[in-house]
Image (tube, rainbow, N blue to C red; front, top):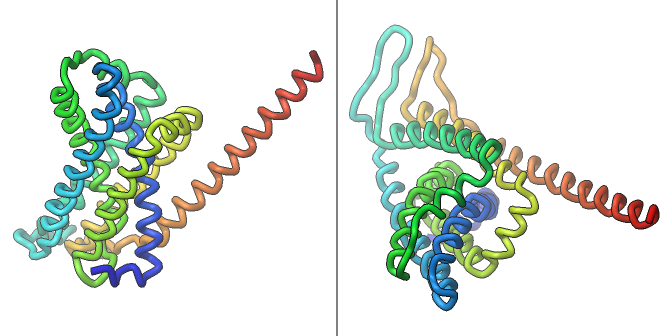
Length: 273
């Protein structure tokens, strides 16, 4: 089962996916924290930890379920006319609509965070919670919504890795477990870091656009889609990994530059005084 980790691609996918799961889970942490804040102080930490633990179990179950659906590769309908031909399977349909969903979710989230930065907090504060059980139910419902793009991201990052379908599931489950455990331990620190550097979350949402486009092309490739005589090929995942790594490198350089500029401005201010 763990032979997949003899591959460098598997380790790169695991590290990258874990990072994306953490960054994309920031909204989830914000929602959980606000939901838990409606409870007595003694129950807030318990609600946060139990909420994240149940969220982890829920995501693993959903991952396994969706992964087995994607394993259905046999075409059940064939399109064949003068300009397009394709063999539709459950695998290609899930990847295609999953890619469309990621494109929609990422662009709408970027718009809302830029135009209405407090929309998450405002929406959740409108609901009153009176018990730990109600808080956990709401946390699970919230996580289910956030799990959709998380699961599709995981599938997009690991699809095609390994010789057996179980190989990709192992990587996805490990990434989810690691990311949730890190969020449970460092929830407040992670939230503070993202609040101080909101561009990191926008960068992660931008990665979803790349992954969504890759899922759509992967769906077309797996269904052997031919448009005007040209067969659509799959995008090598190495391109995606390079784009993510390069973007993160530039962002960290930008963060260091901002820190240096702020330090120089503080020194100049003190010298002027």
